[in-house]
Length: 296
Image (cartoon, rainbow, N blue to C red; front, side, top):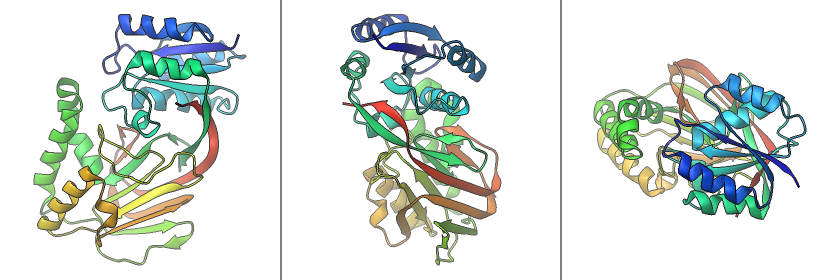
């Protein structure tokens, strides 16, 4: 029987002991399961280092938990040998939505137990940090920052509150001057930019389809660049993002590639939900089929 390490984070979303016990019971029908609770990258690294012959991990948590586990496997050089499963117990569960995993934790555990897998691409940034779902700079990162105080109390609604506050504040804020290069070719538009997004997953912020055509197994990362400037068009852009229709707008460039570089005005970035400090330079590269995940 294959070995599986179930990794739970007590601080992740709606996870509780009862649900965890139910999930582990399902997983034990197909795996030799060990459950660990981790609260830091060091905990994850130790848990993996102590189990050199591990076959699989099951992440009991949300996008942040998934990112942490994949990052630990990447740093340990074990993404090619350990299959990753996800039981969505977080606040947004955006990558789970892209993979079309069941929202119910027990049903998601049954997907892992069934054993169907799929190769998944991975994005690595200029610091060798991984991006599993998506990274974006500009108004999306500012919305994430504004949502922080609301997210814990309101859950996914907190994202909407942050977006609304950022939208009102940003109506008259000028866009950034950026040079954006995709696979060595610079985008030719010169207008100020309000958002650049790259990713494998379709959704961010608890369900907003920021990259609506993304496929995490197609060997390409999706790129969305918004040049929207006027207050009226910014409002229209925000509504079109919620509907997943912004990629059709004339002030948005949507394309695919394997390497993206952005230089110019310093902007903050949200990478798999984690906010970074402002930087004038970002780079992302795709590593096709870098890991394997359990899927329906």
